[in-house]
Length: 570
Image 1 (cartoon, helix red, strand yellow):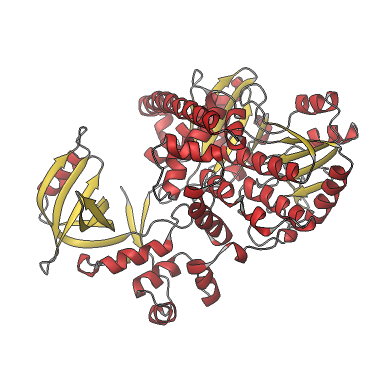
Image 2 (cartoon, rainbow, N blue to C red; image 1 turned 45 degrees about the horizontal axis):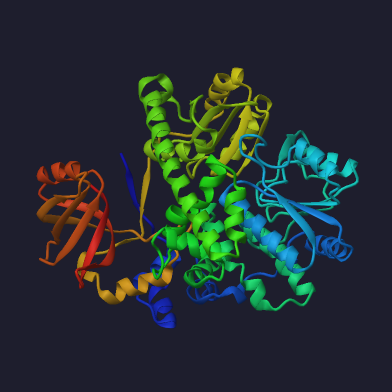
């Protein structure tokens, strides 16, 4: 059962509306996203890349720039060690292209998800030593690799960490003790001593900041710095960062550039997905383009996605993009199989009584664990871990709900785990198979989630009558884009609506079209996507219905009409 709540944040909406020439409803939506000061509202509405904070505010940035400038000048061998997801691949590409532009002798290694696992492992340090690497630069990893980095330092290597994950810590009698790796420079906005204002940059944006500072020091034109905006935007959306402040500007500006990108690989991927000539939104990045980039790291090697981004030949780019599209289709089918198996386990065992779901799917491809965990989290509205059997033991990924910090809870079970890391909302872990059931029990014993916290909450921005909807208001809503985590699509609501002319459409009976009429007689076209027959059954038993909705302009056979998309009903 959902709990509907109305956001009731206060401000002078008329004053904001007058100052910025927007509808008071738009002013209220902006306030609901915790944008309060007039200057912050201006940046929210009209901010550009020129409004981004200086990269030099990041801790150790000056040290890292000095080191890399010196290493580049004397042609020391540099190796970038990235990660196999969309953020890690994007970060690797930014560092590789940026350092090559400066004349560095640089190569890359993206760990294999199955063979190497996440981040820097000792075998990667040993390989770097054998290859006579002078300097390692990490991206989207490294903050949790204190022992491995100490090993590299023992061999005389220079190490620069660029990361955005939580800094590991130990709780001691004298307080919290942060475990910062002994690298020559550690660039991570989440460091407690870092003064950078945005703690929620993705890994690729942190890598971009390093290249930005290096370009500034070396007099590279600003337009070359900003060429990385679309890659940073893709990574920010793909890694599900909060679209607030700086992140929102990066995504907004990057999406504007994406349809005209000079990157041949991205152009080929856009074409392969039928998006040429289209307005590309955060949705397209999160659910169309991004999964193709991720697919190679899941089912093959992420080096293929990196190769696509680095491609300079259009024909090769087109072939590579087609291969990634096919891989993603395979990934979708395997994900669906894994999700169905996970649901059977939850429904058919006492797992369903747990507040934190720990689901062991030994035969599932380990690269799909995170996606399946996300689907299970959505279905049951509980934090979910999906574990799989790998060559070196059990590995898994978790996805959380807003009221449960997954990383902090894993710290409490650290003695059962071989390795772990992540964010409040997502985490990765590995453990011995004999500890799986012990881990399940412990993580639930430590859990403090209440029934109220485990009740899905539908947050309504504005209870707004459908009679208020206009073309002008819908056009102004686009000022709030891009939508995503931290800047959700607005949600409106009205009760007491009569349903007229209901019809069910779609091959799978998953679309309901209708007319809704309010108590004053205003009628509006509406559509509901989902369990359409269930919706129709509910409507037939009730004289009126309450709905949450989002208004849009529907274009059909050249004719435009205002309609609402129903999100929830009761």
